[in-house]
Image 1 (spheres, one colour):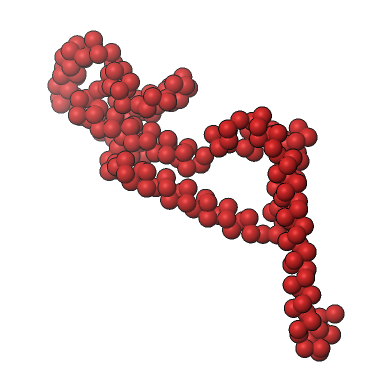
Image 2 (cartoon, one colour):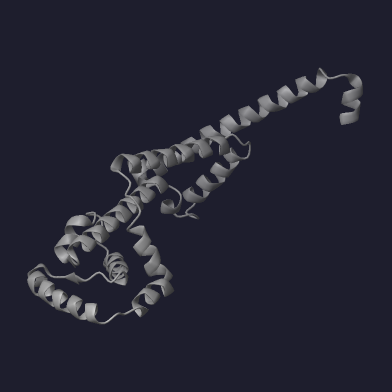
Length: 216
């Protein structure tokens, strides 16, 4: 899930950078430009408002497609007026706004290719799998899993806080099989504990008597 979320964030940043680049070329953005550039999954009003705010902080004008010609004429007149009157304070304003400065610099950073984005996502997923593999080697992990499963069965833990729906076929089937899986884990854990104790006893017997006496 983390890799998937990161992949979506990377894609969104790439699209925003493309919009910034387009705005520099055109001198503006239209709402049609936004609709074409942003991922289809971006539908939340708050998220869209945040994107618009970020673009406007870079002093990017966002207009309707029908207003393009009128905007260009007005922009031309404004630029001619600005040529006659220097405004050094504008640069100071940009430097005084860290967020605006960051977004401006972000637009100058080379974009990742889709292949690079996918490669980064794969590396993150592989790293997560490796971490889980190492964590599951600890002796206390089996009991920790059982404790969490018991909370799920007894309704003391929320399902969506523990299990990823996209990793299972259905919640009902998962919860139906969970008690049986817990029983199997308990049996395996008990068997491993017995074998570990047996190995420890045999190892102790093979040690020199003086060393065994010290360990007692």
